[in-house]
Image 1 (cartoon, one colour):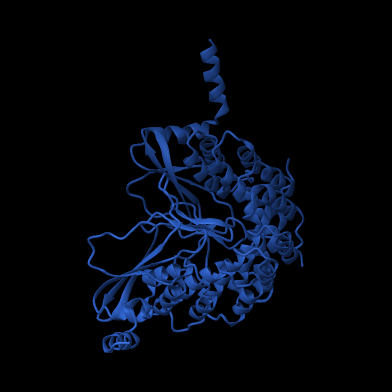
Image 2 (tube, chains in turn brown, blue):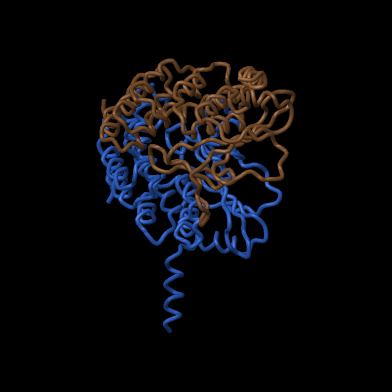
Length: 250
Length: 258
């Protein structure tokens, strides 16, 4: 081994390639401007490349349709706005490609799980539409992120709308119905519990229907009970309708 | 000859009083207010709302007949019994809009006034309800019910069962038939519901939002046989909102009519 070879190896060990650095570190290296990256979309996700996204969820396809335009199955492309070293905006796209003329810092294709986790760390501080885009962009990644979504749902310091978004996507995730329904008991704000009744209604497994019935029967907040009843009325489950009749007759 | 016979027949179909109100309105070049005796329970402030059409807690905005319950935020004038007053907007001799008031009659400067008997007002309002303008027909139902006269349920049943009428008119007719049925059964909303009643009411609402093929039969059954007044009342209300002609049969039954 020559002296020169040793020097190159030592340099490589001390300074890993840019692609090997965590996404957060690479994003944070850009103080002002735009950072963009792409990653693999979850199965069943497609988009028109222009912000329109369609997701094959638990109840079939949700999202927008664009007439004759092709719904491309990926990748997820994310554009971050940076100002004073902070991520201040998030936009997601599925399909399509970046414009060649942009002067954005392009991180290229990154690991979907890492990207989703990064997006869920910035979502609580963004809130509003940007928080919603960050959560959705994470949720449509080809990644298992139920624990991270749960943390956003339970983050009392995050904007309530961001927590509601996270709850929606958590309900659509791979999380088991029993575990998902258990989380309800620690949900406090009215808006979150109200959203929970809706999200539960979108899962048609037995434990979810049973939980909705429990909420309708005994939640401490009468308004939440009413919301649960409304969603039970929308259910295809015979026991949901039977429960409503029981309430009327008892 | 045939034409003469038709003219004679239509002259006999409308009472003279109705013709008089209609004729005066047809000649009017400004709004006309028709004042007539109101049912004893009814009250209002004469300017913005009507209340206690029946012995319940509902009020109706004079501008659009929107129904609401008087709550903590109530800030309108006192509810005073007095005559009913219908203000008709007239364009080219046709009534295009009705607003109804009960209570003190404010001094009028820009309206023509018709003081009518209950029977003349009933004939005029009936002609509007059975007329072609569905918006006016729907808004004439409350003024007709406000009359100090026998309840107009047979007419409203005919309207509700007539598939040629617009859904809005039929739905309004059904809503009032349902309200009348609740009053007839003595299950009007007279006080706040208990928490259990609130849940029963919500459960009925939830059922009412199911597909019509399920909800209408369920509501018909509950309207006929629900044990609790709150559930029965709610079923009657939501059944009326469906606009389904079968609701008229249930309401007729509850009112003791055919």
